[in-house]
Length: 220
Image (cartoon, rainbow, N blue to C red; front, side, top):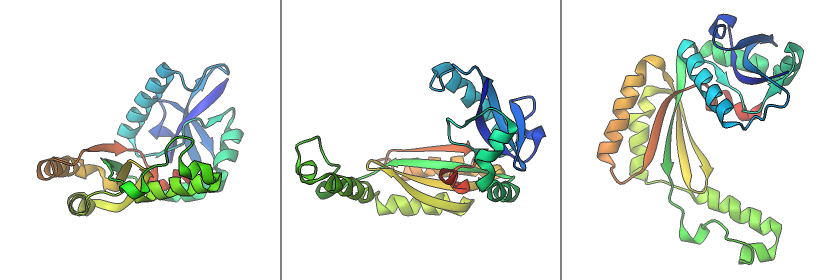
């Protein structure tokens, strides 16, 4: 048997009754036990994990781990999180009452820096390095209307303890915020105001989410 990790928590009681709680490196790892031959990409499993994540978040804020993190024992889990465990413990202690919000908006990309096309176009004919540079330029050329950006920072940013703009790819930009749970109604109202004032900008605002961006999960 193996376990697929879902999140990192401060207390076992934040997990018990919803998922398995494994003590590791000073934290509690929530997880689900699976047969060794269970594929992690199974749709029913993904839906099950999404449901468990939502129930865990209702009980207490936690740090989401990158999907695909599996372990076979507490020692195994501890070894995998040991390098960041102290930092994550501090983040959880400081943000027990907070969750993340995300606003994803379709970005504009200038025609001169559009994403490189299929094989045979100039960037690919020159070299692999040129192609990678062109990809990088396309990603970093992504932008959104300044008026909408300022409106997001005014309407949502003022509600957040921390905020960050992230360019995910050449076609979308994301605003991430760290917000107190008791301000989620205000977040929803801010989203309605943005929709009303900027009807031509397609965006998706969602919350609450476990800590991920503000726990620097990519560093795990």
